[in-house]
Image 1 (tube, rainbow, N blue to C red):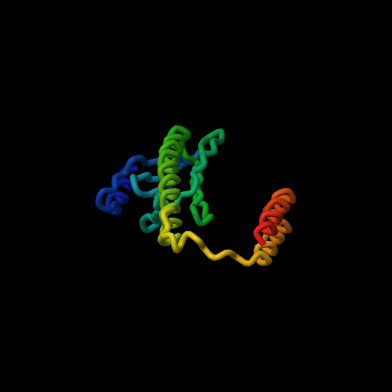
Image 2 (cartoon, helix red, strand yellow):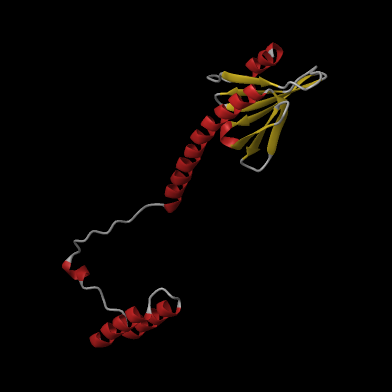
Length: 181
């Protein structure tokens, strides 16, 4: 674990801290275990190779969901990414896997809220400016020109056919238009 932690500490960026390390423990012999390293910014999977380590860095905002599956001799942590990719690590000690899971759930809740806020901001930005009309219009603007009664009846019939209004409402509005003619 110290070897993994020393390598990971070299990868940390300014302000990033290692919060938890979970090391794989195979049932028989574990010569070079894989590990999950949780930082305040990333979910890192470290896999030892003959010539060193490979690290798979996953930013927390890319994590969609983390699952825990416990078996008789250990546990599996599966990390589903926003794009649909899945990363998993098995043969983890159950106690360590539970801590990884609990930590990931806390981060997931924060990320869900951040994604929701970002989505709202994008929708607001996409909506553009809002035009507000005041109720106090100039006298010359107050009397807007009347729409052609035939056009009004045609629109009314289209609304009825589309199911936007009921027959009773159609009949009432039709009578109003015909009275104004």
